[in-house]
Length: 107
Length: 176
Image (cartoon, rainbow over all chains, first blue to last red; front, side, top):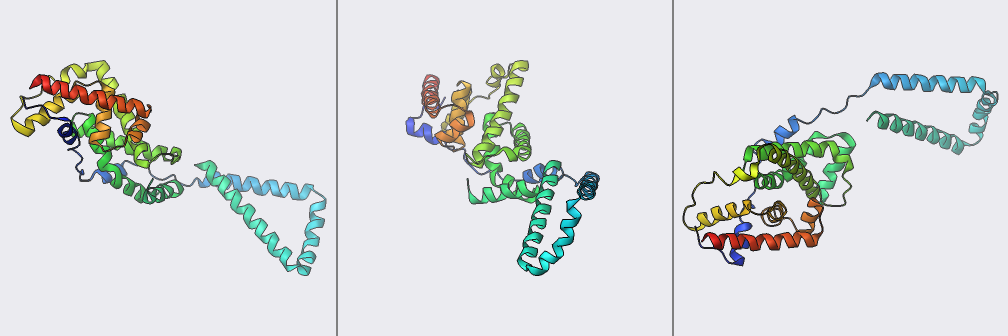
């Protein structure tokens, strides 16, 4: 048996093994075992899109005030260009939000 | 958490970026494998298996990482839990602790002998004492980090460290 160390030497001995461990292919091995990224479920997206389109169609045809409103829109937009831009921005924002919801549910 | 870690984690979260995750593994593999090598008493193969499981679990659960502690601390916690679970199972079936110190070769002289004696003495500590010493001395964690990984108060970590070191000295003195 060796001579017992004093406090400082014991601390030193305990801390000796902090050497860097070489990767040596470890990272590649881990990455090869990672699950492949989730594939986009096109069938699900198609069904959701078709259902949404049907819903919009039904809502459009069954609401008597909607066609009147739509007919008056071009006149309103021709008078006020800012209104046209705002309306377009709102539609784009709505589309992006819907995409996020659909993609988020798939994950 | 370092800026590099958070940027890489964001890339993994947003686009499942395997390259970003590979970079995270490259940055932290040494520390995680080092800790596991010590916890497994130098069984490199087993330690690397546990380390792989650690990173795979981290990839699966990365969405639950809140950034409240360092990413490395979060990884250490996963690694420690994987080792503890496996250690518990092995101990239940084979009684590993009784045989672990039985097949250790006779010590040589000088510094190497002292290190050998220290390793033997480490095996005789209680599990919390040994784990705290491994984490704080041999893996370079702070007391706070070790407490976070082990889910115990910082004061308890300090107590385990102090008692563990006293026991080590006593073991080494008795053996001398």
